[in-house]
Length: 237
Image (tube, rainbow, N blue to C red; front, top):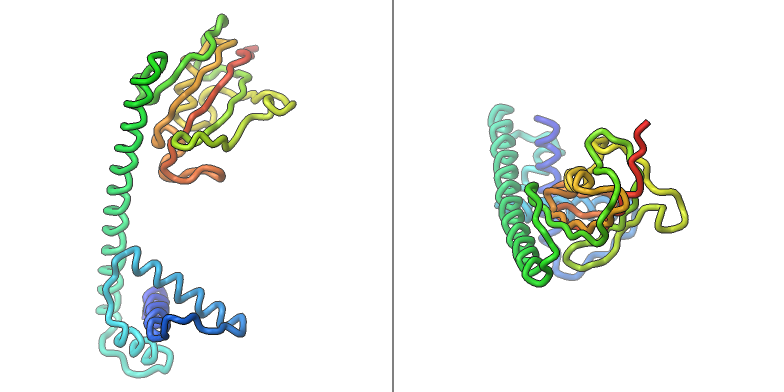
C-alpha cells in the first residue's frame, strides 16, 4: 500500500480511537503516550480544517487490518484513487479558505485606507496601490533602482500600531546600506523610489505589497504594515 496513504489511514485511525474516549483528558505516562496523542490531535485538526468526513469505525478497522496484515477490501489502484481524491479535496478546501480569507482581509484594508484618507488629507495613494505621507520633504537626489543607499526604518502593524522592528540606526548603530532592488519586499522597493535624500516618509502597505501570504519571521501571513522610512544618502561611486 502507498506509504503516504498508509500514514493517513493510521493517523485517521488514531483520531477515531481518541474520539471514543470521554471528554476528560487521559493521563499520558510515557513519551510514546505523548507522541500518540500529539499525532492524533494533529491529524484531527487537519481533518477538521479540511472538512474531511469519515466513518470512524471503518477507520479503526482499516488501521487494525493494516497493522495486523489482514485482508484488505481493495487493491492498490483503489487505494491510490482514494488518496488522489482526498488530496484534491484538501486542496480545494484550502483554496476556498484562502479566497475567503483574502476577501475578508481586502475588505478590512479598504475600510482602513478609506478612513485614513478621510481623516488625513496629507496621505496620498501611489499608483502601485499603497498609501504614503511625507513627514519631511527631502532636498537631495531621488533614489533610483540599482542605486546604493543608506536609510533607516521603523515597522508597525497597521491595525494595532504596535511596533515590531526598527533598524540599527535608531538604536545607536549604523544605518542600513542597501542597493534599491536587491531583496526587499515590493512596497519598500517602490516607496524608496519616491523619496529624495533627507526625506522621511510614512508608508501604509497592504499585505500584498508587504510580506503577503508567506509573512516573515516577525510578521504573520497577510499582515498589513506601516513603515516610517528615512533616506539618508545615495552612495553611488
